Amino acid sequence: MEGDPLSSTLRSARHAPLGLPTPLASGRGSGTSRTRRARQRASFQVTRVLRFCYGHRLLHYPGKCRHLHGHNARVEIELSSKKLNRLGMAVDFEKIKQKIQAWLDAELDHTMILHEKDPWVKILRAQNEPCLALKTNPTAENLAKLIYDYARGRGLPVTEVRLWETPHSRASYRRNE
Image 1: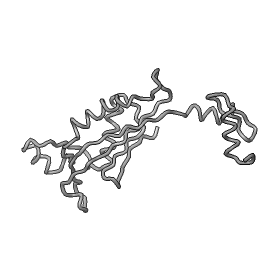
Image 2: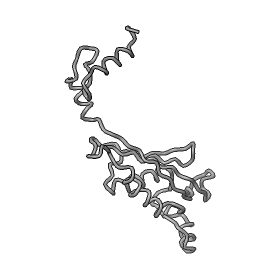
Image 3: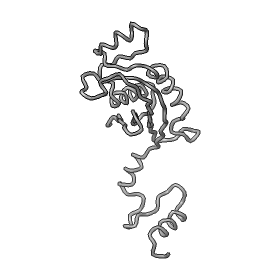
Image 4: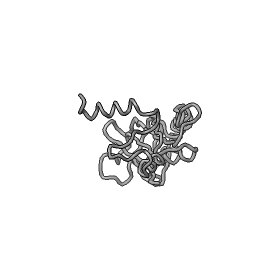
């Protein structure tokens, strides 16, 4: 159809030089300051999904999460880069797995994660059970920030970490820069 906006967009895209935007419908070309600003902000994103199992409880919480319980966590770690490397990658998925999954397995997987003032910390440590004591309650939000901070500390260009505590509940941490 000749008057169909999708057809004219596809036709314009087909005839545009590869990699260059087509002129805007208002008559302004690709040299507008708005387009240049958008190009400066543009970046590539990659997301790697990682998993680990952990136990926790929330100190001083009135609901059922005050009891010891566990989760099968799904972590989505999003990384960003303004340009691609010589292989055409923003960040190698295998590099993310090697740096972050190895740490998750060693430090968080099958570990009881508790607030440092939780009386269970002493009990579990006395039994040589894996236990990580945090300065904050081990909420999904705080665990997402913990993983974010670890990844940034290893030089990964992390933009956001999303932690799925259950298939229906997710928390995320993103630093506003």
